[in-house]
Image (cartoon, rainbow, N blue to C red):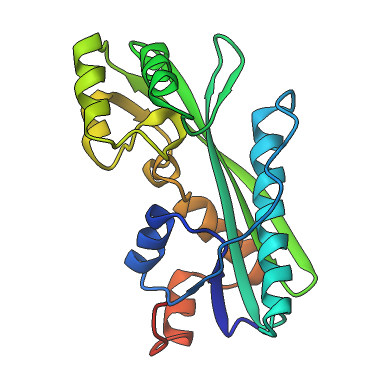
Length: 212
């Protein structure tokens, strides 16, 4: 039984996506060890992190006496993977890393991997989604001007596809929202397969709840 939705993420992008889907939810920011073996295949890397975040949210809820049995806990982790160098790219640590990342992605394809985990009681379901993105050729000046906006920081791959970073994208093969940070198509599929429900049923069921 799902009586409430918990978003185990402090990401404003994931929050906005759920709000646009008309799903009321409560945010529980997970605190967990994100030091994952970088030699793992990217699909396993993101699923491991998503699962850690979901479990951390469960523990945080228990400590604050929040019921977890009737909650659907949604956790997600997103990375950029550059296949030519077998490189996993997360959020940039500083200006230099952001510049190097965008230069690396220029005029090439990369893959955006998201691990999505749904937890309800003792049930845990984790899947991955992959979207391929092609960047057009970027000049150093363009990268510098983009970095001056502050947008690359806090973003996997150092760009936001739903904002100014859209100017760098030539093609997308897969779920656009996966690149933003929450694979909506995969979420819908998992809700149907794992819980025999969908976005519309959940929205009606939880109608009247307040976003928080």
